Length: 118
Image 1 (cartoon, rainbow, N blue to C red):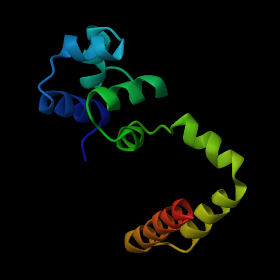
Image 2 (image 1 turned 180 degrees about the vertical axis):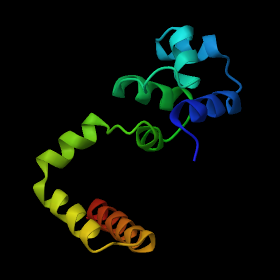
Image 3 (image 1 turned 45 degrees about the vertical axis):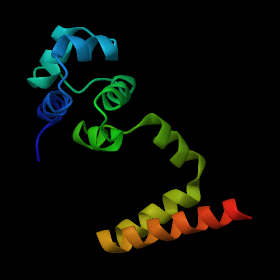
Image 4 (image 1 turned 90 degrees about the vertical axis):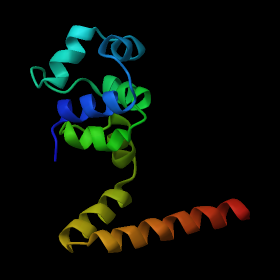
């Protein structure tokens, strides 16, 4: 797996965006973005990661994972729902497989759709 900076650069190039253009859209300096891409800077703040994801049409969760950081909104949500933390701990302790997690996600989507239909 690529590191954070290499992934950013690949995403930027795939979107056919220049360094200066991307930096301007995100609201950071081109020099700072260049240092991030070259691994000379630590991954940026959560706000900058979200802005980069938006500009680069990327999944912010992937960028957060690569940055070894957590989206503060998700952390706040988890802290506000201890039952969700208990579920995550349960899944971790019981070594839930990717397919089991995908089945749970599908079930959750189905529940939300049913709730919206009522």
